[in-house]
Length: 321
Image (tube, rainbow, N blue to C red; front, side, top):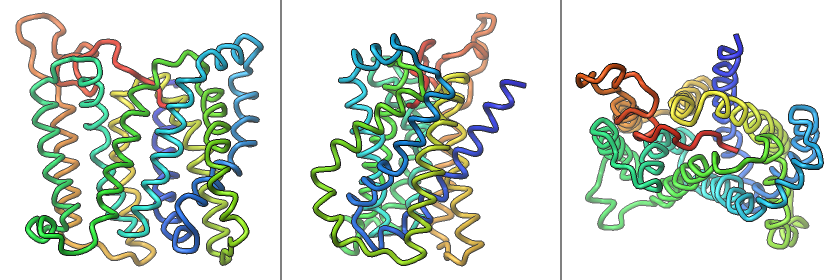
C-alpha cells in the first residue's frame, strides 16, 4: 500500500506540473520570467516550511545538517528552483506550453544519461539508443520540423532552446539529489529560502510595476501552491522511496497531461509536435528497456542493470529535492 501511495504521488506531481506550463504561459505574458520565478517561491516559502515541520519534523540535528550542507543546497536551489523556472518561463514567452512540455519529455532519458556521465559509468546499449532517439525527437520539436530553417536562422527558436536549458538544469538537479542527507521536505524548504534570497535583489526593483489581470493572479496562485509546494513535496517523498530511475519514467506523464489539458482548453497541437513528442517518448521507452539475461541469474532484473533507467549504477542518485 505504501508503494502504491508513492506512485499516486508521482502521478499527481506531474499533473500539477502540467498546470505550471499552462498557467505559466498566462502569467509570463503579463510579467517577466524573473519576477514570476521570485513570486512563485516567495509565496511558496511559508507553506513549504510548514509542511517540512509537519512531515519531516526536523530536530536541531537536522537543521544543523542542513547548515553543514548549505553549499550543496545552494547549487540545488540555483539549478532546480531558479535555473529550471527561469528557463521554462523564458521558453513560454517564445513557444507554446504544449511545445515546451513535449521538449521536457526528454527529461527521463537525460537524467539517466547525466547520472552515467557524472559517475563515469558506461551507459548501457538501451540507454545509448534511447538517448539518440529522444534527441532526434527533440530536434524535430526545436526546429519545428525544418532543420534547414533553424540552421540558417529562420524563425524564433529561443523558446525551444531555453526549454532545453531548463531540462538540463532539472537533470542535474535530480542526479545530485541523493547526495544530500537532509530530510527531503526540509531540503525543499531550505532551497526555497535560498532561492528567494538570491532572487530578491534582482526581482524587487521590478515589483513596483507588477500589474496582473484576474487570470494572471489566478495563475500565480496556482503556480505558487500546486507545482511549487505540492508537486515538489510529493515528488521528493516518492523519489526517496522509489528511486530516481523508477520515478523518472513517470515524467512521461507531464507532456501527456499538458497536451490533453491544452486540447481541452483550445490550444492547438501541430502534427510536427505530435510526431516529435512521440519520437521522444519512444526514446524514453527504449532507454528504460532491460537487457535479456546473459547467463547470469537475475542480470536482467536487478536494480541498476545496464540499460536500466539508473544508467547501470546500483546506487544511482535517487531523490529530487
